Image (tube, rainbow, N blue to C red; front, side):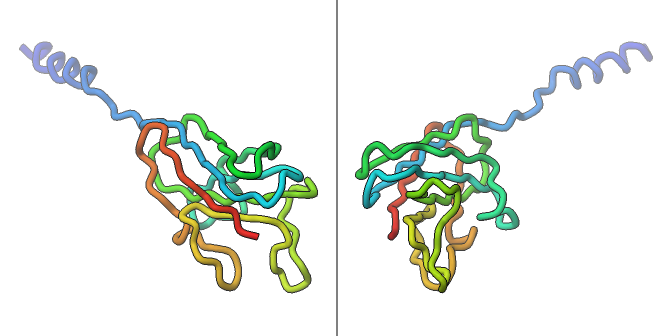
Length: 142
């Protein structure tokens, strides 16, 4: 009887499924490049602490079409994210600015927030990601 008392809960525990985080593909579609010079850097962030500092993933893509370009991040967990984009025309791996800090190259953010003084914040750019093959649209600003 004691053995039966121990085995039945153990079997029930072994049959319990542990929820697995869903993973999906996230496609970022960029619009409105002023030219096809250089490359585009698309960075994916998952927190305000790391936003614009340390992406969880990034891609560098040659620009072949100034109208539209798509980048896909594979196997992304459900959660909140933000995307930043730089049109790195001179391929120096950074956003060039003038002496006042105003960008000399194109840029963009998820949610296409209005830019006032300084870059957008994570809270302005964040979006909930929980769907399969979700696609977000970003308009480049110059």
